[in-house]
Image: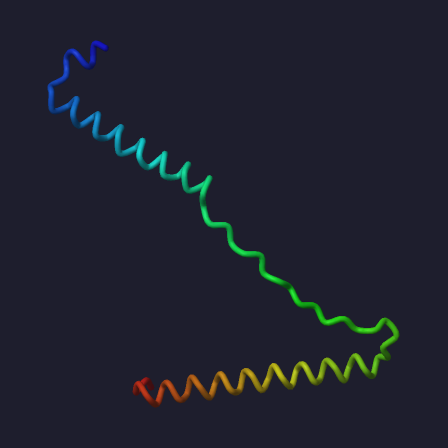
Length: 90
C-alpha cells in the first residue's frame, strides 16, 4: 500500500490499465478454452485385403499403386510447368 501512496496519479492509472489489459487477455484465453471450436473428427478409410492373398497379388497391387502415384506426380509437374509458362518464371 505504501507504493500506491507514494506514486503519482498517472502511474496508478497506467498500472490499472496494464492490469486490466492483462486480465482481459487471460479471461479471453479461459473463455476460448471453454467454448473453443473442436475440430470435427476426420474419417480414416482403410482398404481391407483378404488374408489369403498371394505374394504375386501383393506385388501387382504395389505396382498398380506405384503407377498411380507416378502418374499423379507427373500431372502435378505438368501443372507447375504450365504455371511457370503463364507467369514467366524461369
